[in-house]
Length: 437
Ligand SMILES: Cc1cc2nc3c(=O)[nH]c(=O)nc-3n(C[C@H](O)[C@H](O)[C@H](O)COP(=O)(O)OP(=O)(O)OC[C@H]3O[C@@H](n4cnc5c(N)ncnc54)[C@H](O)[C@@H]3O)c2cc1C
Image 1 (cartoon, rainbow, N blue to C red):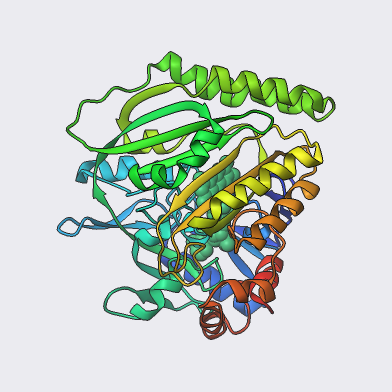
Image 2 (image 1 turned 180 degrees about the vertical axis):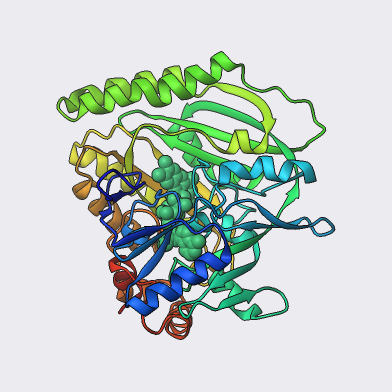
């Protein structure tokens, strides 16, 4: 978000910059003109979505292209359930745009504030061992390249680039149109329970395999996991949404309002964290309901935090989680945010955290006013020792040398970046670190 004074800041308040210029192109032509003008002036340029990445991946010191005006449906292929959207469309706008066609996105992450382009460019994912992240749902894209030309990547043209462009880290060009493979609109039956953590860990593989979408949260300093198991149902199935009061209690009061106060107080009195965590797991998370998919997949998150998330080979989730649990016990930190564990299917996108392997994700968070460095550093050591790959939009300290070892197609991606952006129009400090100069 750009603040008065022209300073742009991300949601987690972990990255900020004062761009030389901010532009709001409302059409593909306007994006092309902005890129050409920046090239003439020798300025760098970056598109920014909702600023929900915790890393500096969206930092735009030159020209910041805010694509909030580049939204909506371009075309619909009803036969194949494919919908082409303008790249700045926010995920929360998509259900309304797809409704007239009886379609939905196949899987989503925890929230829907992100732009479609930003979400796909960083490998945003939800959970479900049979389902990939958002980028795996992309079947075509149109980009404005560094020289201002249009590059169409689809099943007929430049098809070999799709596995790079669908998850392009903002390094290959400015996405202006994105085609999403949708599915018929569906409901989710959600079952959310507190359960003994050890039981959940002992049956983790089964749960991940037997549920459409399984995840769990563990509040450190408790021995309880909040499990979420979602089953896909046809749109015609009966809906049993959460009553408004229940939804408000769980999501507005406990998950957000009271939580903000506790997190704030815990920065000066860390000792309140364990009893609060025990209370939180007793009060929340025991509910069952059926609603349209997007309402079940996504929640609102208003307590600001910083996050690190690592993708692991699915079989390493259990040992990595055990090591993380032991670490927290050993170090005596008071961690007020739960640890989140999710799953995803293997895919073949070059820079996907799930490239070539069925994956599990472990995410750690810290309230934004707390310094996350010690915690995240120690967690990162564990995750990398279990073959982890960091989420591109979440905090980590990897660089091109360590990432090259973790991504078999790393050099192919860098070669494509060199071809499409030889003068580094779309480069910033983060991309220089993770892809090399
Ligand atoms: C509260 C919260 C919850 C989250 N939950 C999840 C979750 O459940 N799962 C998950 O995987 N992640 C999650 N994230 C991370 C988030 O989904 C990603 O960081 C995502 O990239 C943010 O999208 P954005 O629109 O804000 O993109 P930004 O952060 O603004 O940008 C991300 C990247 O996309 C590029 N980009 C944006 N638009 C374009 C364009 N038109 N063309 C080319 N490049 C472009 C930017 O240059 C940058 O490189 C969460 C983040 C927050 C703050």
